[in-house]
Image (cartoon, rainbow, N blue to C red; front, side):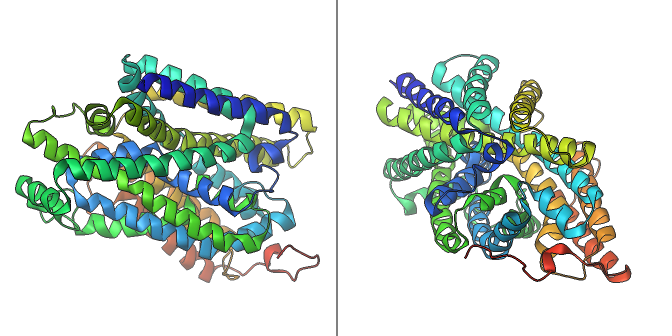
Length: 489
């Protein structure tokens, strides 16, 4: 029954992808969907891609290992959605409409009049997207190996094959419509698991009492002796509240809304639905209690916590729906990252830098977009066969790359006229290098800082951005010129 429901769900999203194929006309419709969607579709696309397999699988596993401190990620990410809409949504949508922007590097080149800024940020987006996509694939493989009863490699191949059909064929149009279905399934699945699991463990008070008996640090906001201490708490604020503005797979959705006035409703819907889906993380605590009671075996890996708990304690029909919800989270973010990575190569590097903005025939640019998307899928699949880290930490590292490379040059730059091209180049480059370099040093245990590596890289890139802007010559920018044409309200 679990297998049947899972297969039916996958067939539905494949069908949407194939149906959407006939609506693809050019690069704009492939990557932005033609900017024609209402607030519900955009909002659910934002919350769905924010949650991801990293959220459903990775963070559930981290809750199992570390307890309530991990929930601060959910609280901060919910706040981050509001902050992103408040700061970026309106200006990004208006700039995109005025200058025909399709990607974040598109906006940044217009802002700083610099191909170098476009190139550096495109590479940062591509690098972070590949790392985050590995986290999605690992989550997908872990989920399907439980559902299908096959080894990880075969499960991964099956999941990626299905993903390939509907992403390569349908582009952003199929992505947004599947996000609608996926987010509905995710919300319902999260509520079922939260309520059902809470009844199993005997209510919130009993849950907290038993978890506290295992490790008192697990019921605190942050650990006094564990790995998620006060500095990690501070890091999460930087990465998930401020850093949400630098997540290209999320903020690129702002391009797609039909009217700017719809953004306020999309903001409330996105934050609310994300907060509801985060209830699934309680599975980590439920599993900890059930293992301690001897009612289930300890998972061999934290990444298997969610699928094993669901399989053990829910009716096959319910379990099938919940597995579909988890696959929905994974698929939703996977499609977003694949399109973001592909657009960085096709639009930002090939067309705008290599071809120097040369117009490409519609059929050729659409075909190229699909082939590059397919190439990114193959590359990330090969890298994910033996991924280097847990889903949760792998996703966190990729968020750090986006945060440090993009937030200062984008969020500060589109408001601060004094920001300069040289500052943007150095800020994005330093953010990219330090976010990767510090993470490698941490994994190799050569240098393990108290703050998260992404948060440190963000501070470095922000300080350099502001400091260099103040000591370099001010420059005019097109985005601050008076409007010469009527824009949508």
